[in-house]
Image (tube, rainbow, N blue to C red; front, side):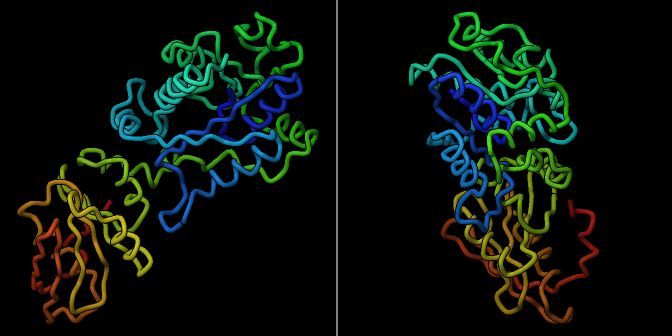
Amino acid sequence: MLLISGLDSILAGRLLKEQKVELEALFFHTPFCPCSPFDSGCKIIFKLNEITAKYLSLSLTVQELGEDYLAIIKKPKFGYGKNMNPCIDCKIYMFKKAREYMEKKELSFLITGEVLGERPMSQNRNALMLIEREAHLEGYVLRPLSAKLLPKTVPEIQGWVNREKLLSIRGRSRRTQLNLAEKFGIQDFPQPAGGCLLTDPGFSRRLKNFISVDFNIHDVNILKLGRHFKLYDDLYLVMGRNEKENIALERLYSQNRHLLLKPVNAKGPSGIGIGNFHSREKLLAEILACYCKVKHDTGIDIEVRHNNTVWIYNILPQEKGVYADFLV
């Protein structure tokens, strides 16, 4: 089974197809995909579907990652990388899920496009072996692009795959892969960078502030929008910066989990309160009122909604700077 992530995995698949190995393609879609909440679907999935069919003649199976995945993001056993990326824990999780899929479908081994030394945290030799052990896949993960630099795997030992026809790519240079893509006629592939928001410094800063709030997998899309205020360890406010974001936030509002705030008699942002907002509703309304377009000597009615309860607060807005320390 081939674990799809981008060009490297497509190349790994082509090398195995050259050896007449039968493949299935699996992709794990995380909530930290950079696709916008405004999009009707994930552009990365669309592109990977397209190139997997075109260059490997395979249909792509997509698995959405859920709350158990979010748990490792909140508290990774092996720590974070430069930002909020727990790359080793993430790989272990995906390999475990891949093993479950393999067992269900009675598949023989796992193939990835990993290259030795390409990613400093998760693709050094020790990390690669650690991930296999933790996922209970020792000897069953074949990395065709770097296979000759790594210990022999079960499919090589059993003769299912000819090791001599595999490669020995090492390091972060992409020249060999690009040459190989040209050889196979592979074009229009996704770029290797930017596939995970956990490696993005700005998004990671938001998530680091958000991590202490009780949030779920669906709340991650809210982090991709708007202005962000952390008021307490357990209270977070996101408000739209324009009409498009206001509409998106209102669509993402969950009446059982969130507080929805909207100005009634003025133009301004919509907002979502997440966490322990009980008895703090007026504070959130006061912050929202600061960003409404109205004279400061005029009161603003802010509608606050949770479940089937609606409040209206009349707020005399203060200057935005009063709440500047809460911005994250």
